[in-house]
Image (cartoon, rainbow, N blue to C red; front, side):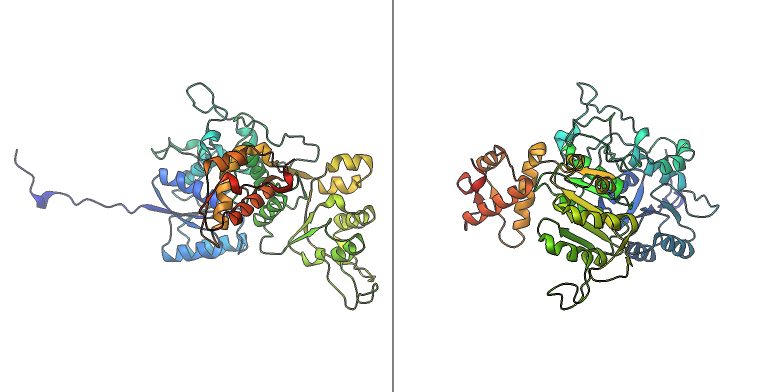
Length: 463
């Protein structure tokens, strides 16, 4: 057989890879969607803000862009309109599954919707989760995950938008085996009557798991449940009551709710109701005019007013005096406040988050806390678990705190026997106590690079 002359051979055509741009402030959302799009033979670029997405598109117009439901630096509607005008050939789809081009169905729209659907409907949380978590809810002895009944947890808008388009999609192209879960579960907002266990066993047929938030260290099922609830309620104006033992990270939950909300560009104002004397707490919250009381040599804006447009976090709300609770209730109902010594009312737009380590529902029942205020604040409940309830996260937490301390000084490590001693402790002070014990141990270790049992000192917590 005569060889084919080189001049007769057709040149190999190089196909330019399709490029998708994923714009979201949520890193886990970007990573999971990138994983799936890469499996569908897309080249993916990521942007964590609207400005960065615009810069990436100017550098090289993508075939498609998927934009999260809000952007931290730009108005979403304005961004979409401007982007559509500047890049008319780019398929523009929001994370809720809605194509934004009027009467235009781009060639990649169905594939993009399919990728979003896979993000939402996957039945495993193995991506970005601990190995022991990946085995939770196995359907058989072979270790294959049981199918999840996810329909009940889909966001209604997303399901409706994708029902007709994604059904026509062909089987997925071969890609990475990992297919992470994305969205946040039911969108009904929940209510104060929910009585979900803090650290219940996670079963695929009961709920979906989502990747944890960066503020919350740990992959225990109860920690992922906290992350799931944060993602659900963060975009809303719904008041949230955060309950949990002291040192379990309630303020971190509040900060995550603010960070993931449309108010993230505005102020996050926190006030500890237990740390301020009763006589001063009202002035701290509502502000006062000059001469309103002895020592008021000048007027002052209160914490509520300073949070206008942002988030107000009332820590240890259970310690607030009953008399002040009635004034707070009036503000919660009307969004209007009156500074001490002033006759004028001021309209303030804030989202209220509250936290307590007390059983506030019981206190409301007994009259120790105003029941009407409780039901105003506890529209949505998030319960932070004690460290004992997610003890499997102890090694991860230890590593996190050692790395945190290692930013300012040579990083130390914890010997296995010292870790075993930590694991045997009851941790009445929860995660905060663990951080302090490790900091104390690092100081006691001096120049040594390894923390041993000799440096693990629990202080007064030991009986």
